[in-house]
Image 1 (cartoon, rainbow, N blue to C red):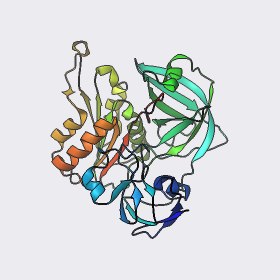
Image 2 (image 1 turned 90 degrees about the vertical axis):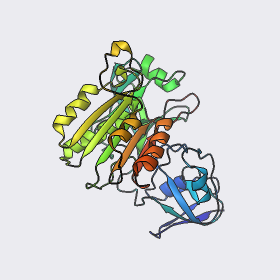
Image 3 (image 1 turned 180 degrees about the vertical axis):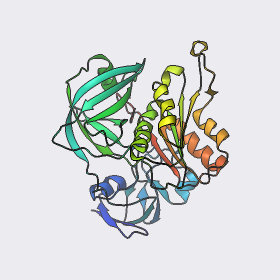
Image 4 (image 1 turned 30 degrees about the horizontal axis):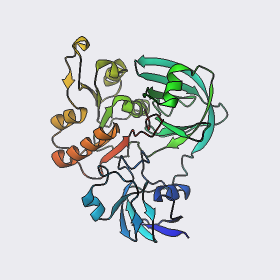
Length: 344
């Protein structure tokens, strides 16, 4: 049995099996539905079910509170249709403009930029163009059938390679391999580009980029793309870490202030040690944004990092700073057993 899923007000439609997520079915039908983590944690795929019945699946309460459940909202990455549906998603379009590909790649370099962060650069096939939007991610396809997701850190115009920022996770098989046995010229396979974490075309709205840890990776892609395209959109990057070595490309981020008009960089440490000799901002990174921007009604926020940071930012920006509900875009790094983070 298949159910018909229709979109309002666009009038698009596709079909879904009962055990298939609505997101999977929509993407398979060529629709660009908003999504990020695919684990029910970031809330990027939230949509309202206007009619019909759904199984909400494993949607996390932080991403889909009780009040929103009662109002008919669902996370499309977790929800399964139990009847024909009419849904209203935040953004819809065709996914055919940038195709998702499965490609081989060769390890070009590994650079340890912090005790627990490796910059991994892979060379792409010269005969197979790879196109992506700044902010998207890829999945490495492992021999055991599992996938490991990492945000792309370079700008789209740098089309010969992909740069990834890999954080070492205790017990993580893939990240352990990256830090211990992986070497240049090794061959991997990947799938991408994936995700809808990229700047929307609203040049009149200043963009706030909020990164935690290796959530800096997609922000690097976004900022360097803005520099390459001559963007004049006001943009502020808040980058949070515990210790100073967590800001592993701090000098580069400061240099962007000279390269991109209207760009500002604010580093924030939550637990600086005495040897860090830190004189900058302290505390939680999203709290620094709240202090600096008590009124976010005219802004857009793009947040990337751990689910706890994403949840706190979403709540406080909406309730304390008046950020519109449709102006928060997130990519949450989630964990699975024996795996690396969603995109770190």
